[in-house]
Length: 86
Picture (cartoon, rainbow, N blue to C red):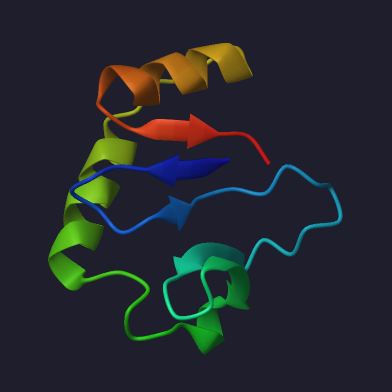
């Protein structure tokens, strides 16, 4: 799921593939102009500013349990995020 919010850095917070490494995350690399996957050990400095990270984590902590992908998407859309399933 790709999440975009004007107040936060563009972020991908999950990979649905069963083969996905749970330590992999992705972000929009403004220098490359594309989505880039990286492990937690290989984070880029501009991936996310500390303050924005705290706000986004706060949003995710408040997320209720959802029964479907549609509920997840609706929850993020209600909070001003753009959601794109990849």
